[in-house]
Image (cartoon, rainbow, N blue to C red; front, side):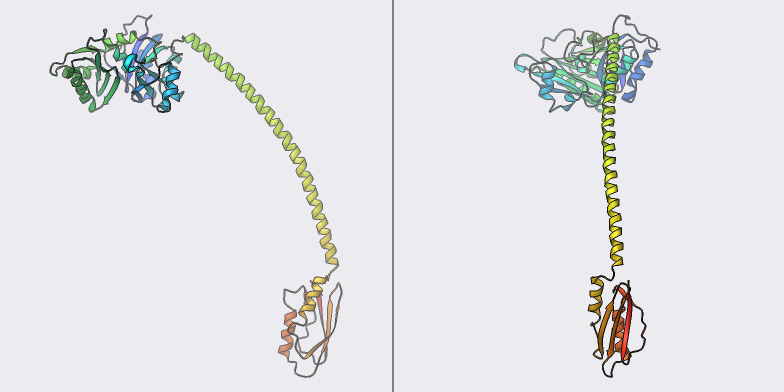
Length: 415
């Protein structure tokens, strides 16, 4: 069971580092696993003793810190200058901040902190919903910079935070450049030792080691036993005190413009947003209604036009049927008769003489005779078969299976 000793009128301090919470009032961290469970785990740990206000140190695995140079100016100026290289600065779903810009020879040098995936805003919203006002949020580097209560006379500083399988190094170099290094898993201890050796190798750099759990205590013992360490040891208690001195008005605060709002103002703001949303929805619905009315009117006009077009097409179809009927009554037409006249002399045997062709709407008669002997049945049937093909617009109605001896008459009907 946790016992929290901070006075109720003070903001409590919590550190989110990697996949664990460090909470003021208890010595060991609380693991939450997946980031989505961070708020749930913290609230469960608070239980009924939830603080009204919270100061949060925020260092998940997806929070990057990079040394950059930017123009002198405010947050918007820095965003305009750096967001092309660091797109997170232009993404409204991602939180970011920066250390105050260095003056003098290193003018514009700063340490930029930014999320590479969304997390902080959802976390803060969950805590606010549970009745906890998040007073301010700072990266771990910002808090470590203030662990030493006085600025070292040497002019440079290295602060190493160590915990179970986690190391975080903050440096303020003699040249005024601020740097961050992080190590996880097996590389965490090696990074802590390397950072300490690098610091004590310089006469102008002060070393502080902040241990945050039992595993961190053991690693801190190892780090501070190196030859002539000259380092100072700190703990979670010292980090809490450093966080209490942080100003919410500095640019390294990751909730600019909203962290100082009380829950009442947040609720009022939320209500205003809801009312605005309802008003906007009503306007949108009205616009949709008017657009639908215009669309229905356009469709009605289109239906009337289509009906007129259909009526015209039906009238054309009726006229075409009437014309086809009239044409049928006029058969045979000149096309059919011409085809008959072209077909008759085709392959006509020399022994046959055509004497007369008569045609009317009912059919036709071809008359002729045989000139001399020699007309065989095969020759006769070959010529007659040429007149009987399905491609002709008629059919023969007189069989005449035998070759004629003298006169003959072929009869047919149009089809």
